[in-house]
Length: 358
Image 1 (cartoon, helix red, strand yellow):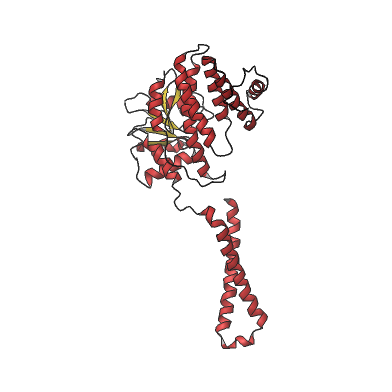
Image 2 (cartoon, rainbow, N blue to C red):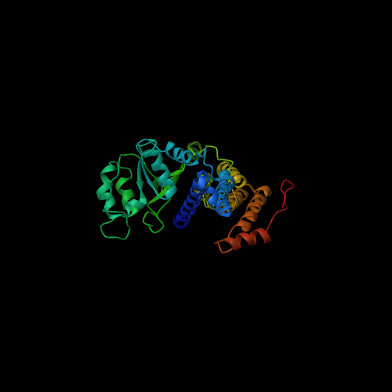
């Protein structure tokens, strides 16, 4: 932190001054000429030292418990769970500090899963990266001098994926999402959740939902989250949120698959949708505060879809209950907020079943 650049030198100067005063006092205390020094000066030196030490001890005592990182393995657990589900010798394009640095730490410092070729999306944007580091990625073809969708001689994400997709060198994976200013992949490639990461698939890829539910459920992280509470600005909170987000992506894929039925009330969607509802409800019940609004919103959509198929009042009211949570945690300026609020407040609603409270 930049503020530390000011605080730490001042702390050092203060401690240095106190130690010098104490050293002077100690020298006088051992000297036979100590009696020639004014008693008040000797006492002042002693109390300055005692005061400084007391403040340091009090500061450490007050802050030790929440600064003690003994046994904090959250980042290694996160990175290990991330890499464990990536196939051998895979190519993984990463974005974001937490993902990039935690995975890089496990590979370079712990020697774990070094077979996975980790391509940093941010580093790809530099003109020198492909020229200098490209040789270290033998399984990756770079179709230009650097990653930039609108720069001559550079390449877009679509071009990078085209150069490497289905090239016989294994599947492509991404983590951290697409670049916010590059839309070239749209209509050509999309993501299919694969544990923490996403597998790159063609835009017209047909999901075998039963296979996806079985396979990806086994890929989701299952390490134990700590009981310790972290401040919102700690990186640990990003790890915890990603833990729940991986389950949300799993459920959202099911919801997206079910939406392809359109206005057709197909009973085969009931089982997958109930699974999505179960997972989203678990996320809502366990997610740390603040609850992100897309959890109750999508749970409401799942139950609304179920109610359309089953005509069961219980599904309708579970949707309304989820939407009620949504309108309490979401920004009123969010797209669709007013429509959801109107549905909750004005219906139409069937009679509420006795199982559920308002």
